[in-house]
Length: 284
Length: 123
Ligand SMILES: C[S@@+](CC[C@H](N)C(=O)[O-])C[C@H]1O[C@@H](n2cnc3c(N)ncnc32)[C@H](O)[C@@H]1O
Ligand SMILES: [Zn+2]
Image 1: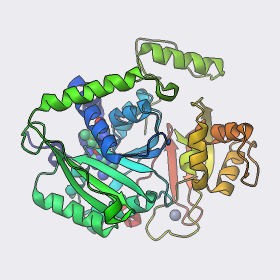
Image 2: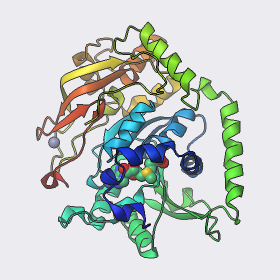
Image 3: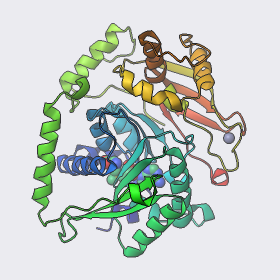
């Protein structure tokens, strides 16, 4: 099977069926969660300073749920309505936007304290029409330029992505650089076929000296990273940092939330059901 | 789920629309109130990013008059609670956001603003 980004445009590929499948797959949840933790590590936010983050290509909220869990306030953008619909059902806390990142952002300068993006950037490397604004270089340029301005100085944007060639990496890093970013590529487990992960670690401000490109993790074993992150996750779950929300939106959590809504006199809270999320009208 | 915290950061991104493109004007909106966790430290850190007049106007348009016209210097608890409510607990679920300059309409459906542009609007 060829890579998803070669099969169809993202909003088609991630239709209703795939959006559900993608989100419910526990193995996938685990992988996306681990990568989100690693990206947050690379983002290196000042500790104990609440941050406002942008989740680029937030999808159904697998990355966003980690941001909720970690106590960040965030905004997510994604081009696939079906993915956003699942995010609504899962009741992530972030504000969601239907947006094509290749068309650029309209956020005011300095809006975000940082940005993350998990498994998205490779989607910008394929042209969908012959219109000049849909060529990958044009879209990347528009994306990085408007992202750079939307981030505060100093800050970082960290992407995990799946490049399929060195040329792609080159195009991405040079375009980011032209847009004003510093930083570079970080590769975890470069010698492991299975565990290798590529990150683009971009810096706004701070000059070349203050912000050093982090080093990738070494070793071979995928299990190594999984264990490491799982342990970290358990640890994080255990501590009730700033009275955080519960990590998994289980039935109890939803019932509690519904109860809360009822108490506040909200009319349209559906009756409790097997279904976990709050019912919504069809989106879009 | 567009809240005033993001509305306050959002300008129009249509090609060539660079002046007077903020704040987007709400029309025909339906709102929902949903409780959020009060985090004074976050609010204090966020204050410098706020375009105050735009926030007060938007809040008033949505029926909340709790914020003073001038951004206060003293951040007491009452004020922070009002700010918290305005920024994080008022959700615009349906409606339209219109650019004051080029008049582009960004519809909000089921809480999600549609920011997609037509080909001729892409910068
Ligand atoms: C593999 S999913 C990752 C979703 C989420 N970050 C996670 O970790 O689960 C890739 C996402 O990128 C989104 N995407 C692809 N191209 C995009 C574009 N041009 N603008 C916005 N989102 C895009 C897709 O719709 C999809 O939701
Ligand atoms: Zn405009």
